Length: 272
Image (cartoon, rainbow, N blue to C red):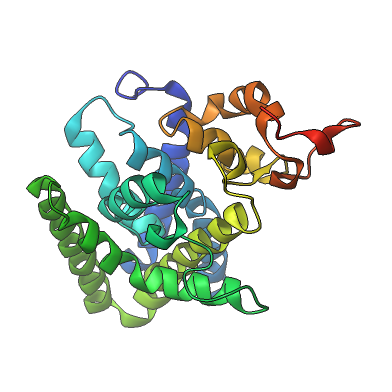
C-alpha cells in the first residue's frame, strides 16, 4: 500500500478513516446492544473526523498512484465525511483558491452571507454547506471547464445519494445515526473551520489572506492550521507545511497568526 501512495505518510490517515467507515457499517451486519452501539458510534466518529482534512489533501492532489485506488478512496471519503471529492475540487480547489483575494467571487468568502455579527459564523456554516453543491455545478458549467468535471460531479453525487438510500433501506435509524448525522456534522465542521481561517485578515495578498494557527489541531489534523502556506503552495504535502510556514513567516502580518510563539517585535511582521 505504501508504494501505491505518492507519500507514505498518508498510509496512517487512510487506514484510520477507512477503519472508521468499516466500524460504522458493523451495526448493519449484526445486532448490538445499546451500550455497544454508543461506544461504536463514538469510536467511528472519532476516526472519521480526520476525513475532511484528508479529503482536502486528496482533492488538491490525488493520494494514490493508481487511478482505481483514487476512485475507491473517493467513495470511502464520501462515506466518512459526507462530501464528495468532486465538490471539493470544484468549490474549493478551483473556486476558492483562485478567488480568495476577491471575496465578491469567492464561494467561501466569510462575508458572503452578510456583515460581521454574532451569528455570522453559524450562518456561513449552514448556508455555505447548503449551497456547496450548487456552487460546484456553477463552476463545472463555466465556459472553458472540461466536460469531465461535470460528469465527475454527477457521478459522485449519484453514488453518494445511492449509497445513502441503500443504508436507509437497510435500517433508517442506524442510517441516520451512523451515516447521515456524522456526515452532516463533519460537513458543517468544514465551513466552521474555514470561517476561522479567513475571518479578520487584511486579505491584501497570499501572505495576508488567511490565518496561520500553531495550535494543537495541527498535530491531530494534518497541519490544517498552516493555511497561509497551503494557499501559497496548494499541492505541497501536509507534512511539509510547517517548514514552509517558517520560510514565509516574516511575510505574514501578526494579525494573521494565532497561538503563535511570536518573538518581540513581531507586530512589525507583514513587511516584505
